[in-house]
Length: 488
Ligand code: NAP
Image 1 (tube, rainbow, N blue to C red):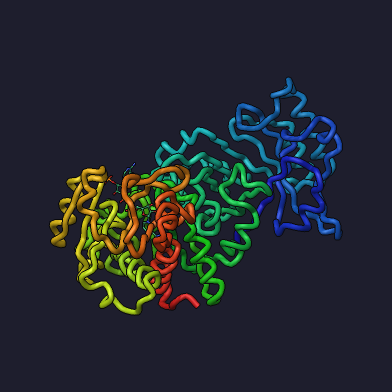
Image 2 (cartoon, rainbow, N blue to C red; image 1 turned 90 degrees about the horizontal axis):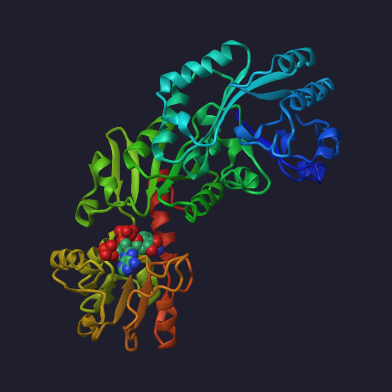
């Protein structure tokens, strides 16, 4: 079972920290400590006498550490390594593979300390090498009796795929560490067990890892992830802001269903899906900007997906990846709730303004057309509004004030663009539109909770709701598809 390694860059309140967090081992980054603290360092033990297994690390500036930044020499580093190892209290010492130190290796041997040979690559260049070369390198290190460690900055989905392929190639090697840093690499940490890594590194303050140590324990239930644990993911670019991991993991926990739901940033859907296949990810939520491009990579498209031309849910089955769309159902459920009506009959004949013509708009347009609404679609790119309007027999126009005449008599407005979404909070997709007379403004944005357009509508006495309800409803539909159970 993979463990959690707390990376310590300061010794302030260490004992208290170790008691308050559930880490299995610590990495003491001696290079990050002040000169005084370096001299006094001892492997840490918890206040109740539990000795925490410890890794000794003194990393040079060239390898991403701080040793040498204040003029410290290599000879001093070797001396400090030997002095600290002589205490006999370190379980592991990490050395750079390309900078082997024979005297330190000898001191480690005498002290009974295992050696980790690491390749720390903050540029991620190593991930552009063929997998077989990386695998040979790892096997050579392992054959010499050391634990091989690759810690690389992942800057793309292709690089995460290389790491996943490497994990597959080294499946039979029990002792290794594969760590992809950054948002693209985060899956390698949360799923350390699936990557076959001995442990995952975490810090008390998020940086440099994309999670907080407590997230691993509380949000992702890291310790419960085993070989057969189902894994689901949400993918988009960016993905850090997504609320889906909190929702889905919360539901999994409440229903006591084994499983873990993780965010994976992706810039290449093909590479991402291959990574999912290697890691055994069977359910995928898809968000901006991949909802349309993802269709190209799917083996089966549900009829609703074909109609809308966008998918937000992928399920991996025997026939390959099957594309579904729960945005449509989630949108309609939340809209009816906002209107305080129980069925779509209440929508028949109503004039609805759609702002935007992207993937989310399409999901809304087809549901509204099916419910018998009269539709006006305005979009920055009028061609997209035209195509959508023609498909459902609606009217269309640009986002500018020349479309004012189309908006007369609108009863419901549905805002589906990303204008006004965090971090660009001041955006208003239709600044000239006067919402007076409209019954409801439904803005699909949920961050911020109130957009500029929503606050203008509220000020005009129009009920305004954000996309939080839709988010929960579309996620609930996904959850049922992933697990077979509705959220409890
Ligand atoms: P998308 O397919 O990329 O479509 C984006 C839409 O926004 C297009 O209509 C685009 O116009 C328009 N747009 C983008 N930047 C613009 C700008 N600067 N000025 C004017 N229009 C602009 O994305 P999507 O999947 O439809 O998502 C759109 C929004 O809906 C996002 O804010 C997303 O978070 C939200 N959403 C919410 C939920 C939920 O559950 N609440 C679900 C899905 C989506 P062009 O066609 O001219 O590019």
